[in-house]
Amino acid sequence: MNITLNGAACETAATDLAAALVELGFADAVVATAVNGAFVPAAARGDFQLNSGDQIEVLAPMQGG
Image 1 (cartoon, helix red, strand yellow):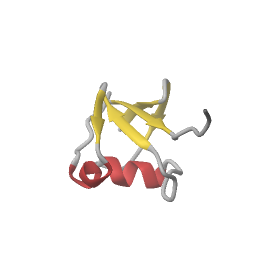
Image 2 (cartoon, rainbow, N blue to C red; image 1 turned 90 degrees about the horizontal axis):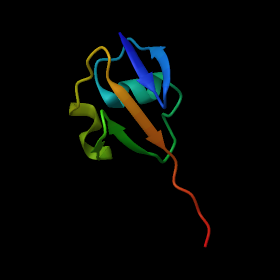
Image 3 (cartoon, rainbow, N blue to C red; image 1 turned 90 degrees about the vertical axis):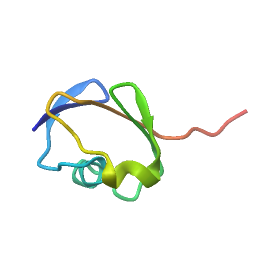
């Protein structure tokens, strides 16, 4: 299915957010996620079903002061 990842169009065979993160190279990364502007907690990613056209944002935490 076609999705948008961090503003770039891409394609995934995954049907849920957790599987999409693995497929897209974020398997071991500590990240925050949002789909269509709504935060999706890590514990809910496996149950979150994706649909064609979804916009996924993947954000890595930053350190600093």
